[in-house]
Structures are given as C-alpha cells and as structure tokens.
Length: 170
Image (cartoon, rainbow, N blue to C red; front, side, top):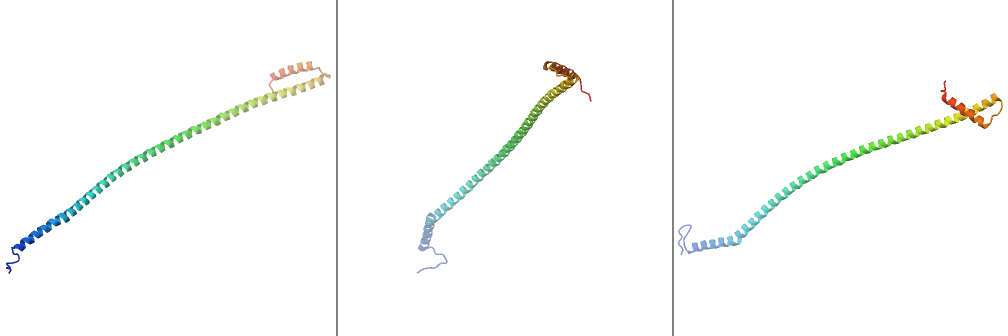
C-alpha cells in the first residue's frame, strides 16, 4: 500500500522519475539541442557571412561608381579638348582657305593687269599703224604721187616718234 504524504513522495519512483528526466534531458541535449544549436550557429554564421559579403560588395560598388564617375569626368575633359582642337583646326583651315582665296584673287588681278597692259600695247600699236597709214595717205595726197616703201617707212617712223612725244590734248 502506498502511503500518500502529500503532493510529492520521496520513494523509489521519485528517483526513477528524476533519473528518467535526466536521461531525457541528456538525450534531448545530445540529439535535439546540440543539432538545433549547431543549426542556429550555422545560420548565424551564414547571415554574418552574407552581411559581410553584402558590405564588401557595397564597398566595391561604391569604388566602381567612383571609378566610373572619374572616368566620365576624364571622358568629358577629353571630349572638350577634342572639340576645342577641332574648332582650332577649323579656324586654321578657314584662315588657310581665306588666304588661298586672297592669293588666287591677287593672281587673277595680276594676270588681268598684265592682260590689260598687253591689250593697251596692242591697241597702241594698232593705233600707230592706223595713224601711219593715214599719214601716208595724207602725204600722198599732198605730194600727189606715190612714195616708195623706204621713204614711207622713214616718214612714218619720224612721224610716230614725234607724235609719241606729244601729249594728246582734248
């Protein structure tokens, strides 16, 4: 028979219950708590590694962004330099074209002046020939006879020399 002495009785069953509880706690600790703790520790390490990796990637991304911004600045500076050089070359080419045009116009003017002088000489020579012919005709009419070629030539040369020295007056 059992003696009931209250809520807790200290007999062999009580020791077996304590022993079973300790064995259950030891088994749970070995097969449940340790794997769960290992899993939680592993999860904690994984999260820490992911955070570390994310931080490293953020730092790398910031470095890349800074590098790209620096390269963009350099590209803009280079583009400005290229544009400036292109403008300078265009200005130089424009000056060359203007100088070439001036040189060509000077050549054309010089050639035109030479042509004008040549035309003036030709006109003067033609005028001389016409004046000589008129002088011969006038002399023939005055003298009334034909003159020989040698005499004609002497008279014409003399007349032209004297007429060339005289300035024409209006």
